[in-house]
Length: 126
Image 1 (cartoon, one colour):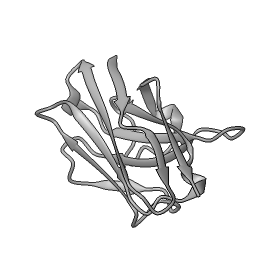
Image 2: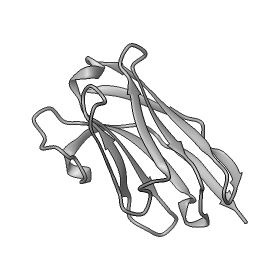
Image 3: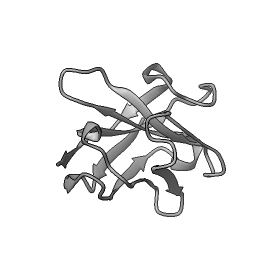
Image 4: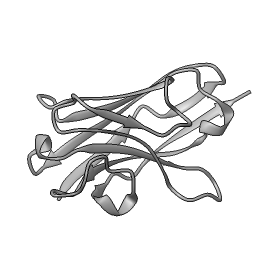
């Protein structure tokens, strides 16, 4: 498995921006698609975005399309989530995840991932 650690969360006003980072170590980072999920209080963990092995393809949840951007830097073993025009409903713990080898693209479901970070809290205030 790959070890993942998220950073960059915090408190931001509605309409603002944050950039999350996820540093990976362990197995070869570029062998896996990478995704971001989020879990709001009292809700299930939901898919946010996924990027393929080399960063050439991305898929987003409809709720974040046009406002969030996922990217990766394989030289730095890091995946990013740029979040713009944040809404109150974006308040959640955000998790980075590495897709299992052989999983089908695009990996939108939790079961497609076999490594998870501990998460980073994002709070959007009015």
